[in-house]
Structures are given as C-alpha cells and as structure tokens.
Amino acid sequence: MNISTRARNLVPSATLAIGAKARQMQADGIDVIGFAQGEPDFDTPDHIKEAAIQAARDGFTKYTATGGINELKDAVAAKLKRDNGLNYTRNQVLISCGGKHSLYNVFQALLNPGDEVIIPAPYWVSFPEQVKLCEAKPVIVHTSEAQGFRLNRQVLEPAVTARTKLVVLNSPSNPTGAALSRAELQGIAALAVERGFGIVSDETYEALVYDGYQHVSIASLGDAVYAHTIVVNSMSKAYAMTGWRLGYAAGPAEIIKAMDGLQGQMTSNPTSFAQRGAVVALTGSQEPTHRMREEFAKRRRYIVDRLNAMPNIRCHSPEGAFYVFPNVSALYGKRSGNTAITNSTEFTTFLLEAARIAVVPGVEFGNDNHVRISYATSMANIEKGMNRMAEAVAALG
Ligand code: PLP
Image (spheres, protein in one colour):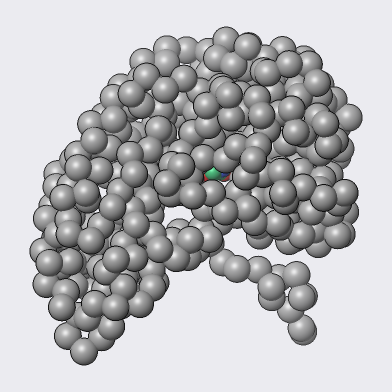
C-alpha cells in the first residue's frame, strides 16, 4: 500500500530523533551527555502523583467528557485568571493530550488549504509541520539575533497578506528562550485586530522566566485581541509532567467547540486519572515550579557564561525556557582532522563524536548559524559537557 502524500511529506521531529540517537549511544555504553532533550530533568512533584494514584485507586479509570473533566477546566480557568488576568468559562477551555495536541486541534479547527500562517523563526519544529498537515502554508518570518530573536510589529507586518489566517507566538520561545515584552505584544495585538488575523499564543514556557522578566499573555491586552486569540499551554514543562500528556487551549467558545468535535473523533478524552493529577498541579502549591525555575536560572547563567568564553561562539542570554541558542557560525570552515564543518548539522555531529555531547542543529528550527542546547540536565552534567565542548572546539583547526 502507498503511504499518503501527507505522511510522506512530514519532517520527523529532529529533537526526538537526536535524543533517541544519544540514548542509543548511552545504551551502547558510550558516555554521552544529553543537551538535546526538551523536558525538565526534575520528577513530577509527589502531591501531583498522589492525586493521580488516588484517582486510579478510586476507580476513576473510565472515559471522561471528550474535552476534559469540569474540575480540570475550572482549574485551568482559575489559573488563567490568577496568572494571566484572563477570564474564561468552561465552554472556552479544552483539555487535550499534551500542548502539541492542543495546537494540532487549533490548526485543524481553523485552517483551510491555502491559508497562510505566519511563524516567526527560529521556531519550534512542530509548528510548520502541523500547519502543513492542514494543507495550509507556513510563512516564515525571521527574527534577528541582534534583537534577541524577538518579534515585533515592524518585523511581522510585511509578511501579512489577505490570506493570513493566523500568527503563531511562542513566548518564551523554544528554541531561543526569547520572550516578548508587553510593548512588543501590544504592537502585534494591534496589527492582528487591524488586519483581522488570529493569534495562537503558545505559552508552554511561561513559568520558566528569569531575571525578573514578567510573562504577559497577549490575550490579556484588551477585549479585541482577546477575541482574536487562542491561548495554548501545557502541564509538561511547568510541572515536569511530560509523560502525562496533558495540555490545554482557551479561546472563543465556537473555536473550542470545533476543537472538541475534532478531538472526539481522534483521541476522545485525555487520560482520566492524569486529569485529576493536573487539577492538583494547577490548584496546589506552586513551590516546586518556583524551585525548578531557580535551579534553571543558575544553570542558564553558568551555561551562557561558559559558551561566551569559548572562542568563536556567541550566546545571547535568553529571558525564559530552558534552552540557549548560541551562534556557532564563526566556526564554519574550520576542520576536525580531514572533515570540514560547514553547517549546524555537521557541527552537531562533530560535538556528538568529538565531545560526546548531544545538541540539536539550528537548521531544524529555521536558523543554520546556531545550535540549541537544553540545560534541563544537572549542573554536574552541564559543567562536564561545557568542559568537553570547550576542549573540542579549541582543537578545531
Ligand atoms: N510548545 C512548545 C513550544 C514546546 O516546546 C512543546 C514541547 O516541547 C510543546 C508545545 C508541547 O508540549 P506537550 O505536548 O508535552 O504538552
């Protein structure tokens, strides 16, 4: 049987692929340090686990309503009010099997073939692929390293056409960690309202921000932009719950209803007892998240300093998430033995082989001058990994 064009055209997730390669090397006894993974190295806090275990013990193991239990929708609405100043009712909230699934539902609910979706680069790998799965067209807008990879109205506006249906915001960003200021968001919000396109605001990393940066949800900047925005968030990063597969979307009721309908024919509800854990995560103590953030903040400072101390490497200090995105292009043209390094993929292979550290090539995120390094690994690993990288880079001829 022939594989569909849709499936054949899909670019597999590079981050998952490199993580898998590093894990295979580790399984083969090679001491590889993983900087490729996009998940906290912390365990899910116990009180969250206990709630899910108790729910399973209580027999809360059957189908739930497709779009999630009311208790969790209410907890999401309360969180959006508490942290973001946003008002949503139950019929404006949908719980899905991960933020990735929430995004997929949004795109499937809104996009027709030929619609244009503006995606700022560097971008998270799934945005363009999910848009393409709707036969819509990703329109990539490049942000500059000099401006800290931050999008603003001036950079966005030239890409807007009559076919622009959505712009995807991801602040703080995977892979750059860049987070937008209130003023930048206000400019983008005004443009969306004037030109009539929607905003998908992926706020997955909002809890992980540093140096006093305050996350702002674009939907909170006025009634007009609120009506144009679908906010997407995830339990994965803020609560170290990647494997639980829970994310959510909030937005206009008719869009949420369409997403619920799609979900009803795809996955049905997210796991019943996992939802009970998520209720406790959102309504209980946020202390574990704060502690995680403090630890990430220390690692970020250390890794940025180490990278900037390496010759020919330049690393912007990002506002949030747990990634850095150093520029390594000054090393292109240098040689390791007989092999020349000419792009981010070759540099990544060089690091894996010569330094036994796994990073992700920037080309996968739409910028070949950089690599993505995740600092969601222990300080001891970061120190060891940066020592190895410094040594390997210094040996390049
Ligand atoms: N959005 C961004 C920007 C991400 O980096 C990720 C995960 O890496 C997600 C969404 C989805 O997370 P999940 O599907 O685990 O909720």
